[in-house]
Image 1 (cartoon, rainbow, N blue to C red):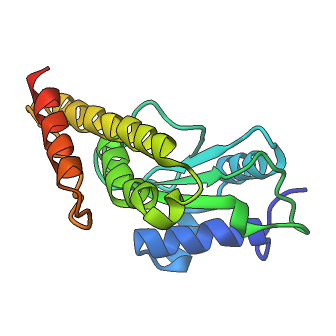
Image 2 (tube, rainbow, N blue to C red):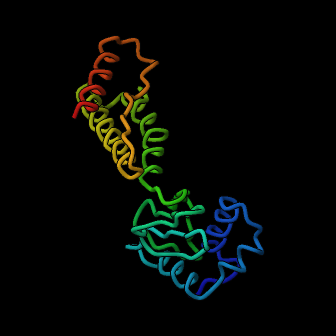
Length: 191
């Protein structure tokens, strides 16, 4: 069934895009509503295997994640949290996640997302209650290694040398843990 005004799937995209891009609704709709965009949005909603849809700064939708983002402007990524079909009648916005991608640096965006969103969640003692000490340590060590690699890769992309800093463990009173984090950072720097 083709998408039309009033369809909650179209309204979700239009509402999030106008707020994120700071555009008036009428101006956005004028550049967004075309056959290609509507077909791609419909395919994204109707196919459970379509998990990602990216809107370029020129309001053009692209299925999947593009190899290269536009150098200027903000791109938006719409992601499904689970492989589901989104129908007009049974549209559930809780299975969709929208994120902003700034410029041509998705790796920088990944670094920011990992350090500012995922690390605090993984470091939260309330989330670690049922993991056990060994599992907690291993998860955090692997994630910090991933974060360090992302920071180094961001430097490579920009042609800079970027040394990853140890995660802020200021709430920890365990001095051995702090020393271990600093030692790990120095070891990473010398590689």
